[in-house]
Length: 311
Image (cartoon, rainbow, N blue to C red):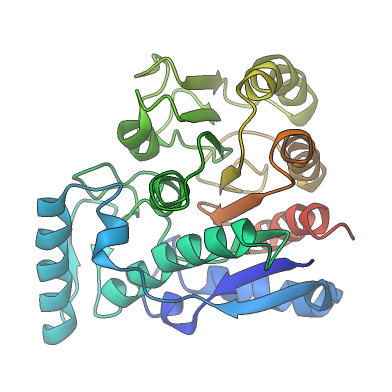
């Protein structure tokens, strides 16, 4: 079996304006690097479908989904962008892009559970891990990983799944959605203090939050994750792993102040790959979150994918 690589051209149509770090060129940088390095031949490229409203409502309140749909459809019809908060702007292509991003995560989940792929990476945008049950924030509209995890549990009948978030920013939206759901173990590290200034005190007993001081480098982080994440994941024995794969903890990324490099992302992926091999039949679905230095993002995603694809 192969590593499925989910994306869609409509994910590039979401555009929050000139100079915004969460830009369409992020996906172009990833694809260009895969082609330039030949890594593309190890991947099975698949088109992201549109998520259904029913799928999205497994993680978000129905009123939120309805109101956001109406707003984004109005923006699409008018062609006029609208700022939803100081960081998050809706444009004419946002609604379709958000449906594709969530749809990729759900389709990847089905493919991995059904054995049509060993694991999967979703190169999608907008990202999702700051989207709470009823609020857009931090570049995010729908929480792609939470939607996929709930699909695995509520539709596909798994009993235990893990969500692992290695973005430089705390995945407050994911925590808001899954805190207290004992079928889900969420493990994360994040720079603290840093936007969204949360996570130091977990919201539920199913959280393993690891705040990291600014300017921490890879060797120290590896030691911490080995001690904090690994025992919890092995005790929980997840039947599937979902990864919120943010690459903005890279030392070249200006949105954070951590000092990771590509080798650190490779190490983290190998750690999680081992957990999946021991407990979940290797089943992993990884979804792109942050990463805004285009070259560092592309190199780090490639390091992540080489582990997933065993190349």
